[in-house]
Amino acid sequence: MIEVVEKYGRKRKCKKLVCEQCNEEFWKPVPLIRDQKHHFCSKQCADTFKKSFRTIHICANCGKEFLLNAHRTNKKNATVYRFCSRGCKDNAQRLDGSCPEIRPSHYKSGECVYRKRAFEYYLHKCAYCGYNEIVDILQVHHLDRNRLNGCITNLMILCPTCHAIPTKGLGEFKWEGKKCVLVMKEKEK
Image (cartoon, rainbow, N blue to C red; front, side):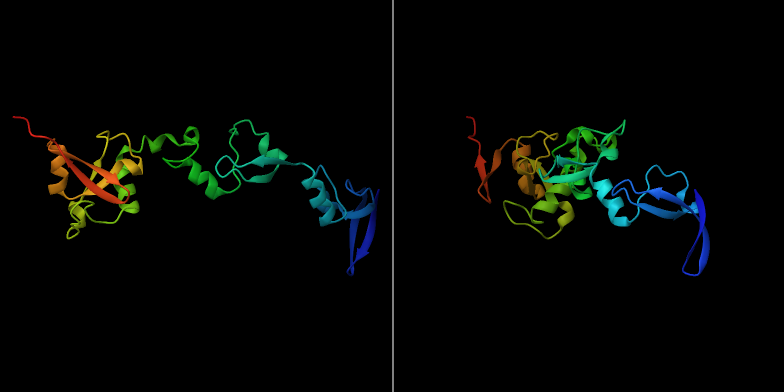
């Protein structure tokens, strides 16, 4: 049923509808009805109705519980992972993150970013002798000699002179707490 309703000094064609949340009748201007599936008498009723479709999820990165609208969980291409925030998603997607399955293909294995990560984590000086004059010549040494292992505990910043020691097979460096220690190899006779 369409009637002319006067509100704020304007005459409008309105239709009588029933609120889907509180079942009260209300008038809504015809141009605002459009093709909406649900109609509500107020913003509070609309919010209450939408909250009833939220489901509880657990963040795949931090483990925190959060609410998510049901229409977001039923997407065809949605992954099984849910995150409470964009920051958690980004952290999980990182090379050392908790969800490597969602990592984009262009991230590769991360073997080429170990230098950047080592310089972000450690001081910009040789871990053994303390050289820090020209930072660009400092090198990153892999303690297990595996370049694919970019774990920060496997990396050590060394100057070229100190880096030559394990490279030439003269000795090995290792961490003892926060201190770098050189273990020389026995010379063969």
